[in-house]
Length: 341
Image: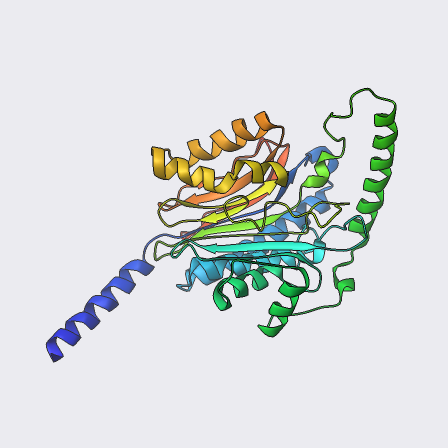
């Protein structure tokens, strides 16, 4: 019996040592849209890239120390939620009523367990609340006051809604309202009331992270402040498992960003995973098919980040830019913003 125990112990140690030597990958995004270099000052560009780099380093530290993918993506997302440059957490946009309503989701590719929160207004880091829903409840999604109560009971940091106020986002709301008023006047004089809204870029603004850890496990997470000037408790794709967020060890991990209504209709993230699992498509082909063809054909746009079970990366987008970056176990790192980089 003693010999059997020692053998099992040695096998376990060998397995973990081998597992931790496998390469890992972390990919993040900070939203997609009409992001043009001509509209960006050198200082502003530097600030965005520094924010993305800090998020990558936070996740990389977890993975480098033998941590799990699920922990790495939460660490990366929290950095982006605390950075007012990005539409999540501290940088969230305002609703039509002048509130900040946030959504977030996280999914573990090992078990397919997932958690999400929507329309929360007092949780400093919505991604941590989503993690609590996944780990500490039998549910997948919680919304509004109920989600906030659950988050408070499970150790999430609760703040006054004024914490999320930023001058830039407030000015964005005022501009959106002015643009909507002008659009209404134009439509009243037009025979076509079905044209695409002029303010489609207000649909953008999300942060996300996906990772493959040294144990071969995948995870995905997304967090957002939603759409500027949104009404009626609107919720986009970010907290909807299979639409804006999905992870499955058999295929890939995905976090989306863009015009959420279209990502929901296409069940974007799960559709890519299904193409890989059911038809044998590789990650790049499956992601490009959905983002570069299916999405614009329906009338939407945006992008996504993804990593598959072999560590391959995809970052397609059909907009002018997407804040994005990745880092690998060997230290290879890239951070990009514009289309032709």
